[in-house]
Length: 168
Image (cartoon, rainbow, N blue to C red; front, top):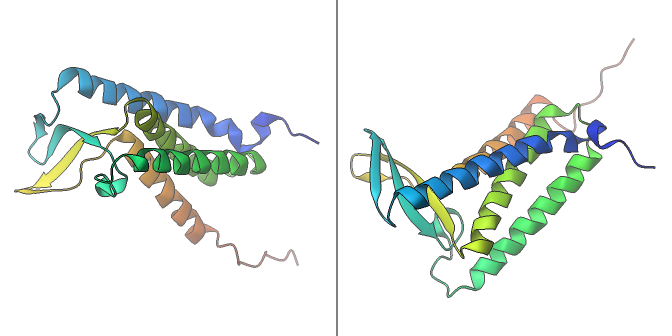
């Protein structure tokens, strides 16, 4: 027996779509505004820096001949499908989990689009202190990290092994 979609975690898919729109829009703006490897200072510890990432986080496997493009695309598809199933099985009232899943789905889909369409992921957010720069990243990466942090937070708020309160 199927449930109405709005009673499931899929009710939160609007958030995934918002992440995708903001992510792809910001990447397109960067590609239209900057040349590859060009820096645009924003504030003293933050730049926009246009970069292509052929690998995964921190450019993992970026220099391995191209097979990693489809490997990481496959992983992203598997994660998106798994999280959509989890959202469907979850009641809409489990807000924190569903928000976390939607953020990860949106981020994974944004980077999947880049990887599939361009052959690389567009990164542009550059935080630095002095001459030390953190790895360049994008809005999709932010959404994935925030979603993962929310899942961990949810584990602390309501641990799975916690016994139910008795009503006596």
